[in-house]
Length: 303
Length: 107
Image (cartoon, rainbow over all chains, first blue to last red; front, side):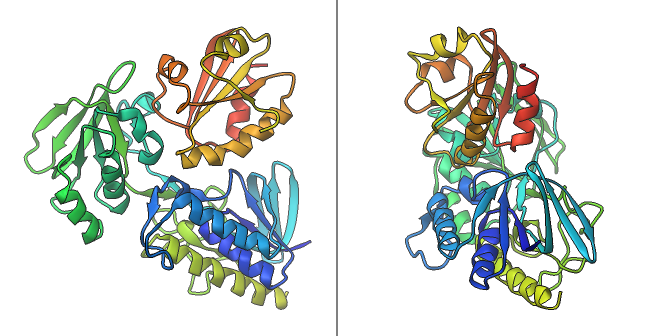
């Protein structure tokens, strides 16, 4: 039997792994893709302490991975299909077999939220994108929209100005939610045109995106903006498939924990973007990973 | 990437379109983080399906013609081919189970 199974190798899972390895817990860290999580979609991280000049998302995660591995953690490429959880028995079912463990940390992270409008699914891969750093270079000298008003939307809109001739930032309200510094940069960027109080209604095109339908939420006025790319940054949804029906979730589906990262089931902890919390950041994820591993260690001692 | 065949604009038709067995091509670029996430999954599939499905990858930064021909505007994109025709397109970094479901339909 394992002491601890950690699901997910983003910043939260890698930090939990680092702490668990140093505590000499018999730990398995599972990841269904390559380690990194959403950080890998981030071009440049400017708000993670210790890197005054910033650091690329890839390098940051690579450093976290190497640090955890240095203390003995082994990251296994396995996809978890389900969990069988009772207060005294925890079984993790993966594509490569079953793992029985004393404690479990869910660090499954979150994925992008879709708009849920006409044309979106059909045109994904043909001009609808959820990752500016991946797909921006395909839009050299083309006109695109970025949708959203948070940090990610503004960071990505700024990134897209390196390639696109014009970036229309579509936001449903009359003020942005993003941190002020990013707002200032966006306001100063001539290639960005902010369209306020507006929601997208449909994406049109046959073999590629030709335009996006817009609706002003204050006046009700509808219009069609001709663009070649639609980038969607309207927040995340938790990767909670494994937790559904087993653990308490908040009304948006994030896993509820206390200050010790304990979920509604004893011996099961959660850390990082999957958690119900105030601020979803790399800097908060690592603290939660450390706390979850420490709390798991205490739990295992009394097992 | 031992089992993953690197294809270029020059070799694409020979290796993929005229392939005797079904094929899957992972379109990626160095700049793309999620491409790095899906890389190990593609490698595993290349081992699992060795001899049955040809698993290849193409760097879209070095090869412009083929991605253009297939209208690729997102990476990672996986395109599955059977008999030289596109059988399925998978956009984004998906877990192995999802990709495998589509691969099995080629056999």
